[in-house]
Amino acid sequence: MKEFNFEKIPIVEIANEIIIDAVNKGASDIHFDPTKDDLKIRFRIDGILSDYSVVPSKYKRNMISRIKMIAGMNIMETRLPQDGAIKSKIGERLLDLRVSTLPTNNAEKIVIRILDYSMSLAGLDNLGFSKESMEKINKLIKIPNGIILVTGATGTGKSTTLYSILQKLNTEDVNIITVEDPVEMDIAGINQVQTQTEIGLTFATILRSILRQDPNIIMIGEIRDDETARIAVRASITGHLVLSTLHTNNSLNTIERLTDMDVERYLLGSSLEGIISQRLARQICPHCRIKKQTTEYEKEVFKTVLNKDVNEMYVANKEGCSLCNHGYKGRLAILEVLIMNDKIKDAITNSAPKHVLKELVYTGEVVTLLQDGLNKVLLGETTFEEILKIIDLENDMTSYGEDNLKTSLKMAENMNKTQTKENPVTTAPTETPGNPVIPNQTITVNENPILKREPEQFEEVKLTPDGNIIPPADSKPGYIFETIEL
Image (tube, rainbow, N blue to C red; front, side, top):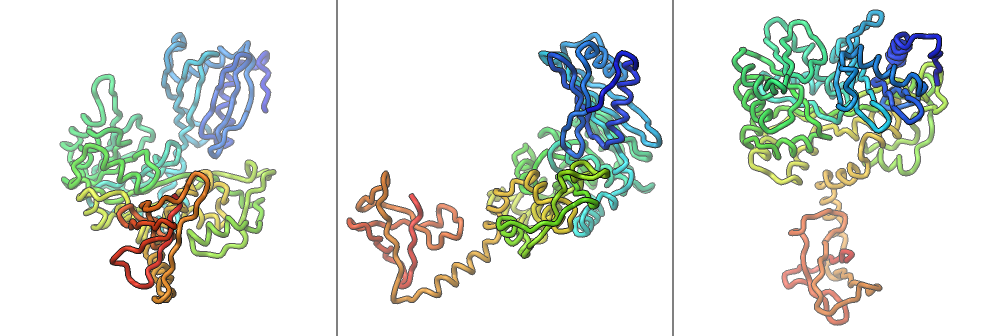
């Protein structure tokens, strides 16, 4: 915890030093959290909040007023939330700070978002994407018209990726126009428009006007509502390349969200060209990382997802070193890049159910978020612990069983062939407390419990009074029956 001498150093200098320290430490946000006794200052570094300093109660209001003043806010208004901005240059780094206030029961809480565009300016090739992901993205951005979406939660680097793509597309032979709220980064050679909802300048109204400005490429900061989605789709099918973001988790969720919007299915199916789903994981420090043996659970995950036997991997050194923060330094992107094919487009157009879309999306060349994350663990770039934090592993592991349906079917077929036709196997239900065997009870059985089947794929049979299964009349010799737990 850093201590400041508030009695001797002016509040102006202290506020400046806090911001400079946050930038030098690589923080993405500065939190000023009011309590009854003081004002706690915290930095978010690599996605993790940690305490930095404390402003005594006597100087709490002065610090809040100073931040609001340099952000261009009304310092007299303390009852309503406010938004402001600070443009600052520290050394050679041009920074854009977004400031937000929120009235609480103790005082106003302030959060400063530090927007550092050095990653975007470095270019798409310097974002640390895998070779396979880069090849797919480069293929996508060469498409002359259609919609490309960058998706993920807030703070997962969508804007950085999007601006890097714009940098690569920004050549003298194209007209690029963006619609943003707010304009986050000024790019020379690109026409950028900021929405102003208070005067009716919304995404939808700007987009209608943009189409008359002879654009080649349109970037929409975010598809927030049905109207914006409809105009974006129409713009893409009239010969424009449309780039935008959406708050969804993965490729399948993105398609579901878009189909839930009031957009014509046949237009969406023909216009959607690609989805880049993104999350950020903390990058392991290469100077102090430690190698350890994998547990049985970790081995099982690697074997199921990557089909690899992994006996050891790198973990973070919690004590860290002088070059990192508790074993981590910086963050890297975990990607899932989907290039739409004709089968997926037809499925969207024909309102295919979720399980059909899932099979089409995740059987083929798609490297899922989980696969990309585990590959980066094997390369020693991040840790298994980080992948657990950003990806719902249990859900994804279940999905892998369903996605590998053909293999499971083949296994089931081989199992059935090993049974002799003369000795069919039957399984009768056992009587347990609260689950008595009822004569003539109709139960559901599954030919192969390995498979997760739809209800219509199950068969119903009757039980004799003594609890034995009566095989269906059309069952073949050697038919296998196994009961599902009731």
